Length: 220
Length: 220
Image (tube, rainbow over all chains, first blue to last red; front, side):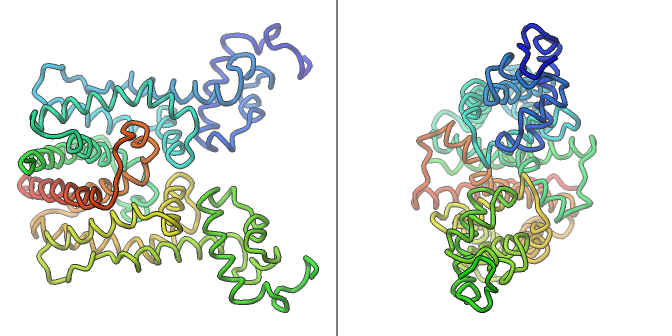
């Protein structure tokens, strides 16, 4: 098969190749970031014709967008945002559910951890794919936490307070993703196995509930 | 002057060139990161011989380490860690001082913002310079917050609780650095001018004090 063969007429046009490209692209983008990743590397790992990326996705940027969205959704499917807590449960329980599932998504290992590493790279070098991800996925996730925080703060508290409380909750979770290199160097014995993760969920929930209630008390 | 001239005998060997190299390297490293930055680019901007980096610093890695350390120290010199609060002040005041100066270092604009962007890159692609920075700068900064948190938690609370409280405080501040691309897309009207910064310092201090006290109450 020539490198210039039309992938639609060869193995590279198959659904299996598309899946292989997405899986290998996930590894390459998580490892090297969007800008330093090469189509050649991805196609070599996927054992696909270099034209297969254009054929299946239209280009590197579109492949990257698909990888980012797909991995973000897969993590949310495995650990749904509500943490299994019903929408009519008290807001303290809904907060704990939201925090637990977010912590699980952050501390997951194996291929499911790639979405966190890709998102961390987006924070340093944002690409157009971030705009799409915020619009299609992150905004609704933020809105579900905003409802919980509003329920806890009460109706009289303003938007600014709601948003900085939302930031205070989320920050305590994503910190373990974004600042891992400093945490592991400062506290090498601070490991998180599954028991510790439950203790961490407890800690962040306790800390956040107290913080939100103190914010409500201070609001005019 | 030939490109191979010994910089020690030319302008490139001067202290002014060394300063120019550090200033331009700061921009280039903040913009492109350690791996993608080139000595050629830095020397062109500094109008220096390409051999000047080896002459003054020994190589790209050493130049980068010096830039990272120097900018981190400059930010701490401008906004000292204690926020101007005396070490014998009550821990609530020391916490506020620590949070205020950290928020100021994170929200600073202009050349002083480069250390934050370089550190954000280190979180995604750590280099050996991070080990040095943690050992020489970040560890003592963390220790000063640890003393405040221990004073607030009381003597009976264990190391694990102290560390996760420390993480809960720091995370709320660095979030505005590390997650800025998502925050600005979710809440484009959430701006922070100097009045808002003081309100943000208030919020993080209130939230953290309540969180630390709740953690102390729950400890056995």
